Image 1 (cartoon, one colour):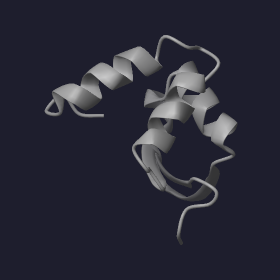
Image 2 (cartoon, helix red, strand yellow):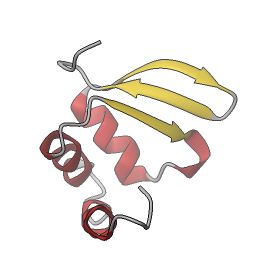
Image 3 (cartoon, helix red, strand yellow):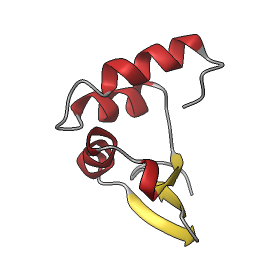
Image 4 (cartoon, one colour):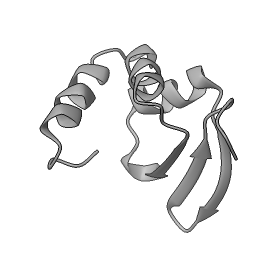
Length: 75
């Protein structure tokens, strides 16, 4: 998440406090996120666990960039 959204930046910091991913899973669900684009090397353990907790599925990857879809979201 980018620094330019103060609300989301604060939510990111809060989500990172739960290493089991529950914070990230809750944040992504609350915000209605359907797809996530990440750089694998930049993911922390809480973010990785949040994707797993949601059952997110990797759709594609190009180099270090990965596209993940949250189940139940529109294609």
